[in-house]
Length: 174
Ligand code: HEM
Ligand code: HEM
Image (tube, rainbow, N blue to C red; front, top):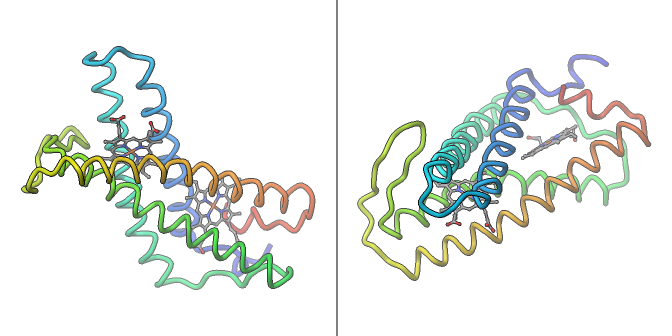
């Protein structure tokens, strides 16, 4: 495959780093429920969740800069409807990857709880508001379901291209 048909090395690296960070954030928060409330393991896993989640946000900022600063390869041939669905899914993924970490931080900040990523421990100077905290947490949790759906569809589409259509689309991102 010609190199001009691939995403830039920055876009490719950032894509897979985001995938890794999301995976760590999700595994940490899902495993957390196996440990009793108040346990050290539970606290450590929540710290891992926050660290990985905020890494997603930092990587997405770099990714948006890389996306604006480099040329994306032209879309693979396909019906306009399929191309539209792909573009929409990518847009939803961008929105979720930026929105989810912000909602997580807001849920903690409005709840008057500390934010503890990367071994840090700080509170944001927000007026405590239980209603807003609860709302941000609810939207964050519903957003998590959307993450599962959007990533599932996106990964299934990539694998469909690779194994059924055999059009080497996956290689644009590797
Ligand atoms: C892309 C990044 C993130 C993803 C995909 C994500 C995903 C999730 C998931 C799957 C849950 C569990 C939902 C449930 O139990 O139904 C959750 C809970 C939560 N997350 Fe995140 N999260 C991200 C980033 C963050 C960040 C950066 C913070 C805060 C700094 C955060 C704070 C929270 C909080 C406070 C909860 C509720 C925990 C509880 O009390 O049960 N999240 N998140
Ligand atoms: C957290 C998980 C994931 C997120 C957030 C994500 C996000 C994205 C986004 C936003 C794009 C569009 C690139 C752009 O134009 O900026 C993209 C492209 C792509 N992703 Fe993912 N992705 C994830 C997981 C995966 C997985 C698991 C696979 C493979 C099985 C995959 C394969 C691809 C491929 C092949 C492209 C290029 C599509 C094209 O050229 O039209 N992604 N991804």
